[in-house]
Length: 221
Length: 240
Image (cartoon, rainbow over all chains, first blue to last red; front, side):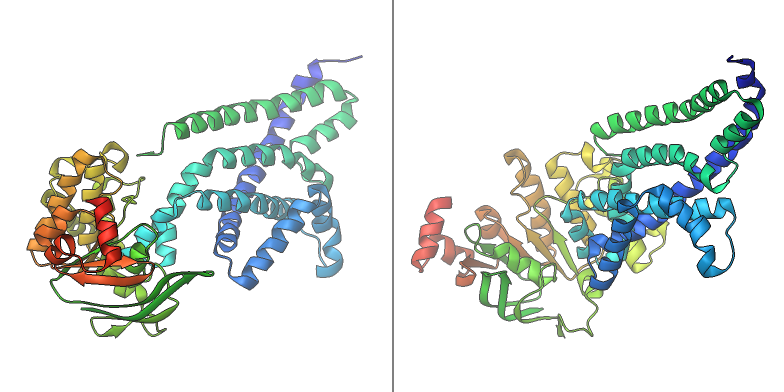
């Protein structure tokens, strides 16, 4: 028998997990943007050794399942470093590294989409390569990549559910616990799905709005 | 001011500049003409090392460029450049476009840089556009902003790479007028352009470049009315 009242009884618990979910997603995407910008710059610049290291990083992260990365860091890493990371720390590292790899490709594409005349104009005024990147190229590139970055954040937000496998008490894990306690998987997981949806729908609306605004040109944006 | 000797530039197997010598004196206005692909833009871009020469020497104000002791960022501050496609920074107001390099490269305070930008924009006839974004301006206006932007670094020489080629005909003169003013004020200028009127009015020297070599040079009068070299003659007969 499906008892829908459980959907609401567990809601406060789920919402506590939602806070962890959001924290993890925000920190993950923040780390991702920082890592992604640095790695993206390296991949644009093509300094040989750094470029190869960056490429290896991106290929490994993109070529292996996130679930494997997550359990490797949480369950596997202690065999080497001798202690176990907090579940949140392990999840944060995984999502940061993961988001960093995907974001670096977005950043790289964004930088390469900026007309090379912009770099030349900046350099011709006496700016260094890094000044030109910082003041001229990156601000334009970031406006252009805001929509794909938003999509990346939505994907990351949903992927945080994987952190339940390393015992992190985010929304999915709490749902599992409540399910075991009550024997009511359907209402509880429907409620969890709804909460994810409530978070992602406005985000994808926002991405679509940004895309439309991009289409109108980037002056003054 | 600029002395170029035996300058070569290859792109892969393509030899774009094949041993060019030039001496540009202080206060001189030199106009480079030549067919497309002749290497005139490449020559200009080598002067401030936007393109790295393959071989040869460029001495600017007594400094030999290209050796590792020379800070090219420092050198470029003294060589303003204006591009065919303007290359204004679209995410900044016109004022910010002009004020940015003085602030970030020279460390000029913001208030002073903005004042300088407004002065320069006034000089190029855009006092009423200081708050506009590049995308809101016509091509001619954008190019005038680009000139103001380059002037903001108080360069000793200005390089113009086909500054009017991307403009609608009715906007060419407003840009040329600004350039003529500059020439009259004594600015050293190297200009890649086919604007004969401009060359005749303010040019001290015209250089005809073809297939990566300087073929002929002289006063605008000599080159345009009495060219000696058959290639110069053939080229001029096509564009005049």
